[in-house]
Image (cartoon, rainbow, N blue to C red; front, side, top):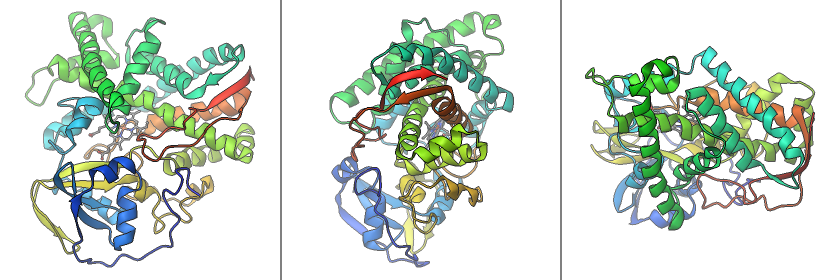
Length: 431
Ligand code: HEM
């Protein structure tokens, strides 16, 4: 049974023919997508018996694709580009303007190298240590509280850790405010009404705040030497010129914002530990291999980003479908991670399945697929796993707690997803 009510439904594996006749859904399906972002592509693809179909979204012709073969095509850099591919509502909340997500070719490769350069083994270890210190600092504070909303607390401690890591100085009073600003950017794009507006306002304020940090770092480079902030402030574009402060700010937020978003996966990990105490016990007892499988299964099983968008750069045909230049294409990340052709009983939470996973680049795509350096795959994948491991270790080995009755349902229309109660714990004690 899925965590999202009927989504995604357990399906018998189906063989997709090599060539399927083009399928067109003529109406605009924007509302269907907003109401069911995680099931939208997968359910229609199953009903139509194809991995590709055309529809209209936001009044624009859009091709939707699912399956590992489709992912391999989608991540072919010669066929697709990202410039102006994402809907505007994503740019004005989640991504910001002129960041790495919207670049192509050499400019993308050079900017991406900046992100990849901070993901060294030493850099990763330092971030894990900083997160560990923040967990150890907070656990005794939780011990005195009648209830702790884990998602909120973990978001704040990750905000502190990533600011420590990047060299952004935050006063204790700033921590809740900056955390909430970063959360709003993540929640804005798929929201309707006030949450969307809040995302837009926070994007303007967040960009301004981060641009101020970049300017300070440029004014006193010696103070920021060796920090991520100093590195981003000093980064030069392919034309040899420093990035405009606003663009460097967007890229700095491209590190801070998603690191705080790891709190969602950590909340899901806490749900999974609660759902099956055997997993909790096994990790508490020190099974490191199982910890790795557990974290990977959380990333596969629980919903995060439903899909990614690109635009056709070079017209081509694939499986009987024509992809004209400029066509927006959506790749169904959630559907691929629950595809019964790739994952046995995909709607069951079974960490052991990762003992047999061969590390394919297109079958397990919670943070995108393909190559981290050459393509748009998430550069933060390793630190996401590291931070989740620290968190699951903390939850199982450094503290005990109870989980009171609460509403752990996940609304299928909310993307990115989060349980209604945001996972409340009580009776916390250290050790
Ligand atoms: C919370 C867990 C995370 C999830 C679910 C996630 C998911 C994703 C996805 C789906 C993409 C798009 C892949 C594509 O376009 O093909 C992406 C890209 C990106 N992610 Fe993450 N991410 C996470 C954590 C992080 C972290 C911790 C960082 C910190 C550096 C990060 C930085 C980025 C950046 C900069 C991009 C754009 C890469 C590019 O366009 O080349 N993400 N992420």
